[in-house]
Length: 174
Image (cartoon, rainbow, N blue to C red; front, side, top):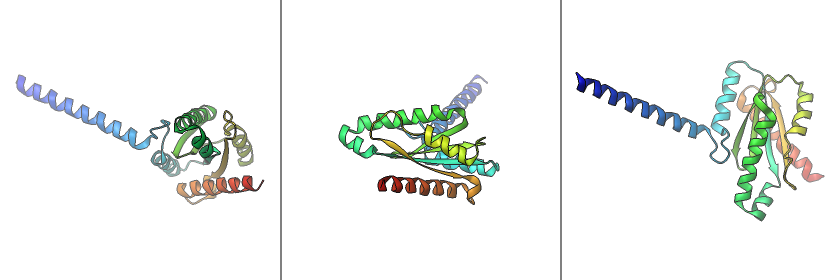
């Protein structure tokens, strides 16, 4: 009987270890390793969940202007530090109201559900508050899209991305 109990404890221990490993793998699959923010997979899952729950949401697509020149001039260690710092700063400035993701390179996305601001007021807030305030010659090109503008979550991200690139083009012309 003691042998059976020990076997049961061994099996239970193995199951717990496998569960921990699965949890670690799930976390790694959804997390950007540099910043600790959610990655593209995490954004897709969260946006699709908001869509399935019929929640209204807004997507802010952010690309850092001037980042490549800074990275080339001062090295990847400083560039990586800037990306981590901007991710922390974005998370703090959006508080508990939004999720922040790094899609890769110098691209970030903010997903905010249930914004109490009108689209116009939200745009003013985002353009003011989501700029990168702590590095000279680096700024944020920001594109914003709302759930009600598109047929699905992927289209909302795509629209925010197109709007961000329109902002980048306009800034290059000025």
